[in-house]
Length: 165
Image (cartoon, rainbow, N blue to C red; front, top):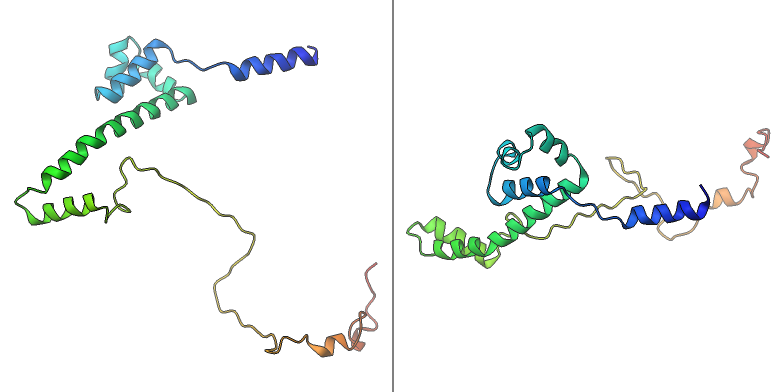
């Protein structure tokens, strides 16, 4: 195949949108929004449980499932906020305190439902081993003079050591 045709085929393949089958889409929506089990959702749309499980192994179907779950989670947040506000009127002081603490934002590190999560990984090339580090450099910042006195060839007792070329 000529290079131009190959490049055009690659561009077409990249621009092609991945579309779910109507049955897979309907099954995912039944699982997410109606709370059906996978086997029940598969049966409701005319799929076998195995077929739906195999479909969920595909990245585009799994991406659609995750997107729908994000929609459900986000749409439930206002109702959850109203529930927390209603709990401020509770007779239990501990429940009142926890609701107030949540609404005040004091415990956000432990409660992040629906919050944006950022993962950061920093790689470095420094090897660190446990133990103590002793700094033996002179305090005045001068180099160790006895090594510099012997020049670039090293110490006199190394005179018989062959140099690497």
